[in-house]
Length: 615
Image 1 (cartoon, helix red, strand yellow):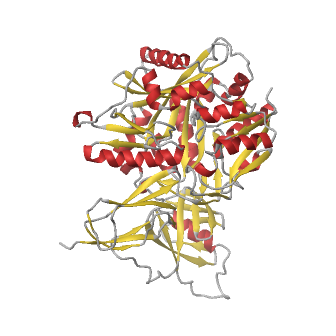
Image 2 (tube, rainbow, N blue to C red; image 1 turned 180 degrees about the vertical axis):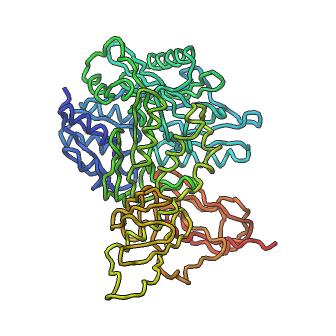
Image 3 (spheres, helix red, strand yellow; image 1 turned 90 degrees about the vertical axis):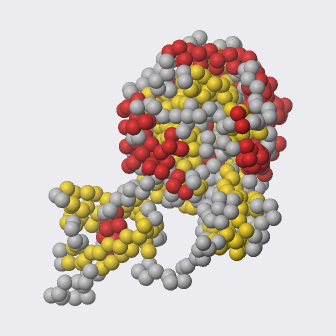
């Protein structure tokens, strides 16, 4: 029996596994980098061991340090979580060689499937060799790892070399393995996967299908179970292929076999030899705790001959600290408040007041809704996200709500090209026009209305806010009866809540302020000074850092005075395990270059200036 478990991971992943351990009475051990010293997963574990450093390569990718941590803390088992070393056969061997229980498949099974190239060969599929025009479009893909990192779509042959280099660098940083390969890119297919669970006694369960088609940068955003609208013949084929993949490597534990489905056909993608981020939707539908099942399998217990029956439908949305309208730029800062209404499941690695840093994936939480039907589950999840309190950096919450309510998703006609087609519409600002007024009235509450009795009405007060990229100025008055504003009736106003009557209907606004940042229901505002700073001007063509991160590359030969072309990549930033290109906004001359390789940058920092060639 397992008594003490170390989780070789961080954040939401570790917290989710610790929750099951607590229910089973298993003692927990966390590992943490210096950047994660005060992270939630390090705080909630029974014991925590420091991994010196901040980057994944220094810490969570150091299997030798993690094994030492397990032994030092008295752990008798190691769970790899998902990501980092979870699909590293050498790490699994090191855990076993140290006399510890490994919560996962045999190292040989991981080895057979960990490389996507070898996995495809095992399933009788060969990657592309020499790429020609006839092969386009193609997908450059990291052989190790997942999560959308180390992947590039190539539609023109001249882009292939750059895509190979970028995918190699990103994969090496994220997984410690820079091997990449090329395969045909299936346009607008559905991403469908099968959850499997196998024991050491020869039983292999298939626990339904999941649809994970809504993706950004090949990383899943919304997942659901079961995958809607699949023909029974195709579903049975997917189950058979998944069992075939598992039995071909004598698989043990939880795993996922992934496919692209197009024109009624299944195209094998890969087998993930670990638990997936989206496993909660399967848990909800089958009434299982997959982590608990992993632990029982590792202890040698047999699975029943048949899995439980599926009931209802579940949908999961991943909340990211990112700005979808700005090329999904990751965001950092203090997460002041994260709370969702009752009735949905929240898996997170953050609590109120935690800091979102630059070193790791920007996912804040997963929100999961389960209901008897798909339509009810979608409605429940969209409503919960809409009413959630999210105070801190910009998130993708509004995008998630709009995606869940989009006609294509509601009617189950989505595919992996969903955001390519709809991102502009889904990120179109739709600010609440009364939010700035509510913010101003809440701020004005309790301030002295008059210096003494006066018979003349007070002068209008004005406040300025930035909301959804636009400036808003609102006006209000102090009266003997309270606060007043033109066009509405102020039914109530205090520092936290404002009620406005508009055309006979009362609208309620919850207001929370953190310095200059104001949150009004789901709107995020920034209070502006009364008079703008006349010195806050930037030269035309200024390139600013869109996110915090590290400058990892400057275009070869780039220097001040060089001629650049519109769209030409100039600077590469790495943030939260992803690389981002900063391109020339126009054809012209590079009049200033401030960025240097290895430099740490903050959002808004001036990197370079391109002086456009005059017509």
